[in-house]
Image (tube, rainbow, N blue to C red; front, top):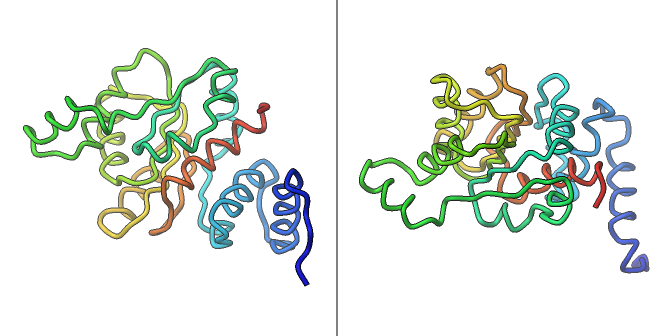
Length: 207
């Protein structure tokens, strides 16, 4: 028999079910809201084990958002999914350069991906940023190269591209770095997961 839940209570009930199904799965209390929101978005409980958090990553992300940092993402889908109202109240905005004509043109001329050029554009922004990557492993590779060259210092990297080519390897580059990160180890991820992690942080600071 189906359970009747009022529309305004569906999310609350969903999180109650997620908490119940997780049972005594070990997780740091500060990481739990992120893990649960990703599961809520994906209905995939593997994320309880797959999400890798560098020490203090959640608190670092919260402080960055509280100070008005921006978010850079690699897909319009992730940009659409991030709560821009909540981010705007904190003084931040979301950037995605992937659809810009000049980015596509430069990528063709140089023989690189649009994600690579997009991350280079993001490195030129005059604000510190959280990078939320849900699709392009080349974005993570470009971020790492820019960091190594001293041209970029992200406030936090959310590395959750999905797929098969260079996905695992690009994530491991970020996990091995000293930059604060939240990474979905393995092949799973996606733009919806990147947005969910951003929103999990934002919602702790108000909607």
